[in-house]
Amino acid sequence: MAGEPGSAERRWTDPVNEGRSPTPAAPRATSTDGRDTALTALIRIALAVLFLDELVVGFWNQVFPESFYNNFPTVSLTPPFSEHYARDFGGATLGLAVVLGIALVAPRAVFTIPAAAAFSTFAIPHFFFHLTHLHHATPGEKVALTTANAVVALLGLLVIALTLVRDARRRRTSAT
Image (cartoon, rainbow, N blue to C red; front, side, top):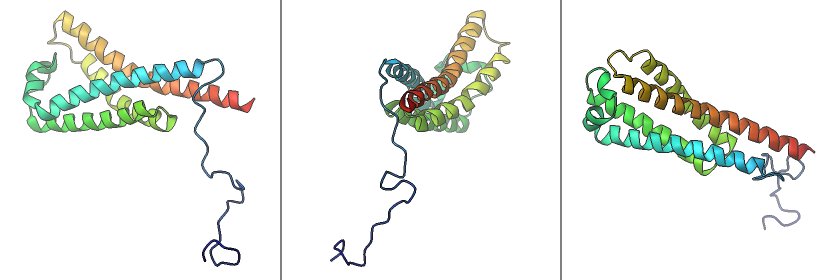
């Protein structure tokens, strides 16, 4: 019978880890002083803002592309409407929302850093595009567009920075 002494089935053991899990354990959820908990809360808040932003924009663009083009503030400042590009942008934005949502639910570095990096890969060039294409915008549109795009672009970078700080603190705490 399999698993009995003398059977042909043998259990493989990792000679380096000697019975321990071959993958490292997830970092502890909290530190003794609560700072890691506060950092995780800030990470989750930033991820929630980015997730909701991408979910709303992506859904609206994917399902109602012409409505998005005609009604979303300052979109009319861009080139003429193209349903193909609007739906492609909507789908890609929904894809970012999925990755951000996963990171929001499980804010481990393995999820938060790639999600925030993917978002930032879009958001930073998007910010600079709008920053250099304000010539037809009103002063109020210029302020709103620049501020909104700067905030979300910085949030992606903030998630990365907070995750790195939180996990460095956890490593220092567990090493002592």
